[in-house]
Image (cartoon, rainbow, N blue to C red; front, side):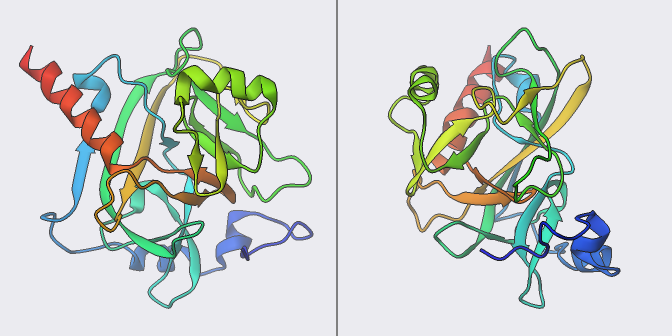
Length: 229
């Protein structure tokens, strides 16, 4: 996996994208219709028990540009025509976008943000902020991590050949303090009609998980039930 930077350079976003980075990102914006693109907003309004596993607004996702180069795109700028780079399954379009917001609550697991900061050595080029349920993908888990993850993930604890390590359990993340309101985003990728398929994608240089379509559909059912009561 080649990233458009190296640990010996000044890894600012300007250096990563170059002088025309914003123009390249703008070119990825779609003018297409929404008939095949589901954008679900504000889960937390309809389902206060919903614990999102999502990226903070402003997170950069590795995608393919119209010029067929790898490029980092802010998660809130992704569209149905964006091709997201996956760990083992090539580039895939987005099928569903998910977004919402919540007030940070450090007293409730799932309702606070976690932050991975720059440490050496790292592929991270900017601090990564995700919800405490969101997972990064790792090669192995400690016994402590396995024990903590079992009630959270059950037996659905892998994507391809990587283990899911949720941010709220990982020692590489710190809890974000305070009660600020955060806007979060996530997405479901096209899956060749396998609604249980999950993919690894890169966020700010770190390999992370995306939800399956089945997980997404289960959440929609919870929203519908909440709205009917």
